[in-house]
Image (cartoon, rainbow, N blue to C red; front, side, top):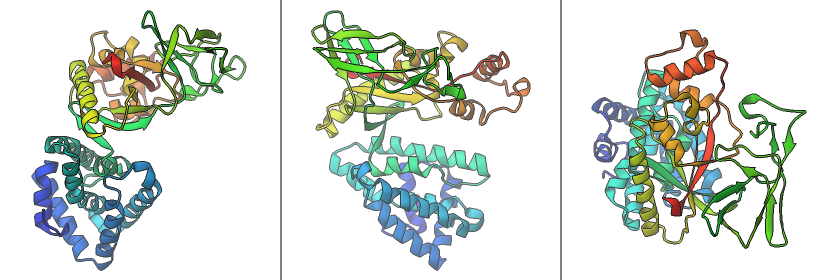
Length: 377
């Protein structure tokens, strides 16, 4: 690729990997020209690019504050772009491609994984255009993960390595049954949901979870498959129950890029691809499970939607855990924003109609969080 990321040919070459529409590439070239001809913008672009380039291939947590500062500087410079606001960040982020390509090659990662992973940039640039009427790039904290080498798209889904939370998970040594217990110190409502979920609190009937490990057994509050904690406790003797997932264990955080059907078989193929991919390219990471937090795991959706819907089938692969959340993400993904009046909410898709009807009847939803054990794939 061209060494000068502010040259028009750089963006043309970059599009071999980005696969953006021609008008988006033209907008990037125009923005690069604006930066090149503006002394302050040019200096900022070179300086911030250098900051971000040092993070390509580095452990994300090791540079998180440095990256956060650099992304903040990108946003602060956008007003200098005038009508092209949103494109300064796009140009600087895309300028990292030579380092990203080099790092992928050093790890032996196929170029097809790179182009699939970078397809998210086109999705988010399109979203920016829909929201602001012009090409640009927002969600910088998310996009940088694609460029620093901490997120990969493998088939239908995206994956990132992270550490598991604090709810211990056990498997019965004889039957294979799974049992998840709540972490200690969590305040729950009477219905077993985390207190404050969807803004609802239970000051009088709520309770706080406890967890004990003693005399060869673990005692705590069992979590049902739909993510509700039970007020009574159960005991799991170590002779019968093996802990298979615990705090700090390496897991793959699953994300669902927009734009394609959520076909469960394609998702399961992605899980299998991920197991092989990380074993080959990150052999030092002993993955234990897949985890996902999303509006798509809203436990209410299984009651709202037909049992054969892709969302409900996607949910069935996951066992839910306690998760304090709300319905903001569902509104954003399904309607763009929360409708002002459910009687006039958009009804042009089956999902919109069913969710709108549910809310008109007084229903309420919240996002969910769950896991799939690696050996169950």
